[in-house]
Length: 242
Image (cartoon, rainbow, N blue to C red; front, side):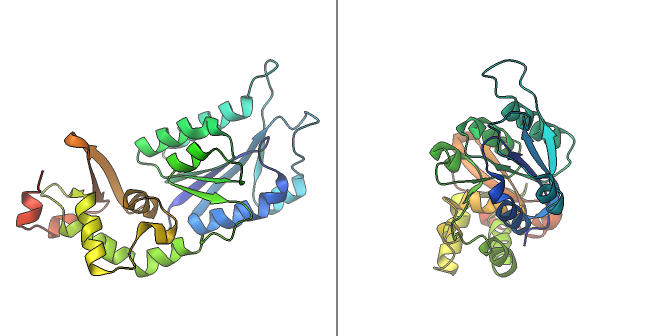
């Protein structure tokens, strides 16, 4: 299981409180939940009824957000601000947004650009684009292999780390495509889609063990967060192919 700190931000105007327990269960499998907030204007009659007893039992915190004018979406704006503060203040290692609103595509892209994994939990009507741009999407009510995140970390993370280090240059950066080819040659079972990820880069990012960066010529590379890369140097690593 990932051990990094996870901040959970719930769009209380978009997600029904009936999913509260499942959201918490999925979040706990992704990391150690350091904060879990539910945003919304709970004084409005058409806002989903987030019962305080359920919220308190699950360790959630209600954040009342009033609308300054008709038609505004203050809950979304508050979630954007909270996520940005989390990144700036380094209060968590990853962010999980519970919503189906496509307006959060920009937030997911911002988090990922800042090397912060951004997970999304939503229903079957969640924006397709939001599902594709986030680090990983979890559908409520689906029997998705959430527990396989823990399985990957326990049984396969060592091979992934070794692959990155083996193909790293003198600065510790490894070409993602070279890493993917190496993993495939070592184990036919080691495929990103086996754990629900669209690409090897999303799988690597989701582990929380690596930093990803795009270099000139659109070459995406990964680097382990610790100094172990310094122990792995070879001819290929010193002179990576263009």
